[in-house]
Structure formats: C-alpha cells, structure tokens
Image (cartoon, rainbow, N blue to C red; front, side, top):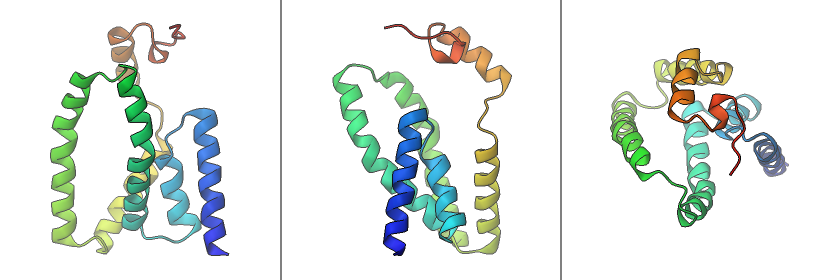
Amino acid sequence: MHDLAFIFAGFFVGTVVGLTGVGGGSLMTPILIFAFGVKPYMAVGTDLLFAAFTKLGGTLKMTRSGLVPWRVVLQLSAGSIPAALLTLWALKTLGPADPAVQHLMTSTLGWRCCSRQRPPSTRRFAARRHPNTLTSGRNHRP
C-alpha cells in the first residue's frame, strides 16, 4: 500500500509539473518529508536522483535542437559545482542526521517553497538581458 502512495504522489507531481511548469523538487521534496516522513537528507537525495534521470531526456532533446546556451551552463556550473562539493564535505563532516543539519535543511526547504517569487531587482535584470521572454512579462513568439 505504501508503494502505491509513492506512485500516486509521483503522478500528482508529474501532472502539476506538466500543467504549470513548476519544478518538481519544490513539490516532491516536501511531500516526501511531510506526507511520508522521509528524513530531509533522504528526500533531497531521492528527489535529486530522480530529477537527474528525468532531466536527461529533456537535456538531450534541447541540445539536439540547439537551444542550450552552453556559456550560461558553464557559468552556472562554476558556482554550483564548488557549492555542491562544499555541501557534501559539510554533510560528511557533520553527518546528515545531525539535528542542526536537519533543522537547517527543513528551514531552508520551507523558506524556498514559500518564496517562489523572485525579488523585483532580478526580474528587472532578466527583462533587460532577455527582452522577448516570459521573464520580461511579454510572451515569446518563436
């Protein structure tokens, strides 16, 4: 019965993502934590592994279509890869089950889930850099 609940949760998240484009991690991680009682570090790890597999297909399709801005990918990677390695080191040092680490993860996840709106300053920046995209408030017409 528990397996069926996971399947329904995945179906629900997949439907919402398909209809709205909202990232699945912002839905699935809290569901795993609060509905199924999964420890935060396990929920994040599970969701990241699932996301890696599901995004692979989209990445291949977008790459073949020539829609991946590789310079931006490299710039994002220059910040995110060191941050991920530093986080892994901290988790290994402190232990993912440490109460302080658990509190930090659940607080950060809760804050992030409640603050999906970008600050006005980043919206203005995105509108200047990409004037014909959804971030500028105008619909993109290919």
